[in-house]
Image (cartoon, rainbow over all chains, first blue to last red; front, side):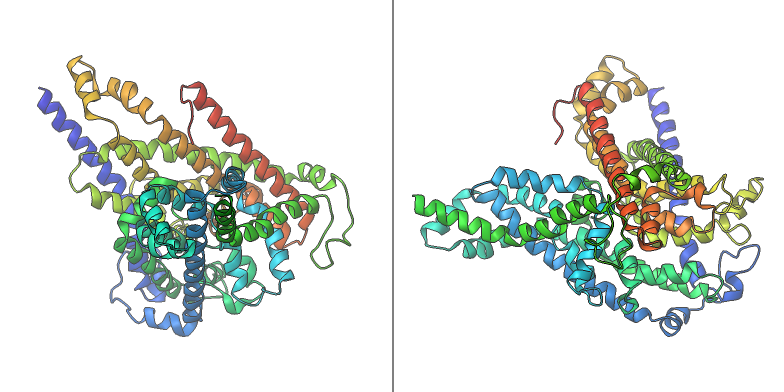
Length: 280
Length: 296
């Protein structure tokens, strides 16, 4: 009796999981399928599900019709630079907060955490004013510098570095190692898993970032990133007719993050479980 | 000894110097600047020092602007509906995924939208919701549901965007719930089974109370995120009447970077900040009363 009931709940479970799962997959399936359609198939009524002949050249054409390579390069430059800076500043700050004793430590750490409470929208106008003041609007610094430090990153690495046994550091001190040597030779190598988690979260967050690049690149379009470039084409439906090419662009936009995710899944999930965000 | 301490202090501040410099400029100055500007009428074309101070006019004029109050209302609807729907659905799915075959594959499928750029999610669903060429109406047609103009009809636009937001946001919550469920010792359930407890009873008496920290965490992070939603509304709400889909973040963006009313936009951002803060403290309070002493 009980076994039978267990089996029935098992089946119900599976139907729920698979049913909702189909809803999760179909939009992606449609995206890939539509990215291979001709324009006529794409705009046909009723909608087509599968192209008669997959138009693989859409993926080449998108580079000719829009400056997609430029977008891609811009996105990579910004995402990689921000990731490198966040890793460096978070490791430095995390080390200081975890292992060094200094005046004002507790207050500074609380302050760092409290900055996370402030919504990003509070910073749009002052940061825009600042990057104009510094003369950065026409170069990548405007897209990179406002994200060079992450309070979350400092917190994550502080937690991780606290777990490094003090004996290791003490032994190095007795050998006469400087703080800089301890940081680069002991702390950094032992912190790699946490750095990997932070790296993947930061990279994906920046790769997908939209609002700030949207504001900055409206003044300097040559720095347009992939999400901003595609959104402009997509919203200009009436004037830009090659909508099916945008879908190919979108697939190309998603591929790097999915590849990175699959490659570093373990670290990414650790980050998600710790933060609750799909990016920072 | 004191020489060592001094050296440690110096070393610590050298390590912290880039961070402190960053926070001084991009946090402390920025927050102060926002507060200052929210009392001024500034269009960004002149120096902010020369901009006239107008006291609380920016704040009071916001509440007499019907578009702002509509944005506030839409944000409340969006934030609460999205957060609660994600919470309930992802808990159900995480529970169903527990001990199922090939759970990792299913989890990846559910998680895929979470790593997809929100802009792309908005664009894809924009096409899916297209009244004549979109597959949403096509599929609903098979089920006998009449076609609707999902993203242009003010009655449906916000709801359609919320459905997309739930679709896109469930994955991360499922992962977090899965971690929470795995942390509950099996012995609790075994003991309850011996006492003859039903599955539903076990869910209410064991699973839910022990998941409280997880639920609190997801409620707070979900609310904070949902109150600031921008990308999805920007991509999907472009063709609906503004008053039916506009949210505060979009109002701030348009006021600042389209209409160049920086003071007014700063005032709206301050209001957004205060609301998010109050909601966070409120959720924390409810859960503390429910028996969670400290969640940090």
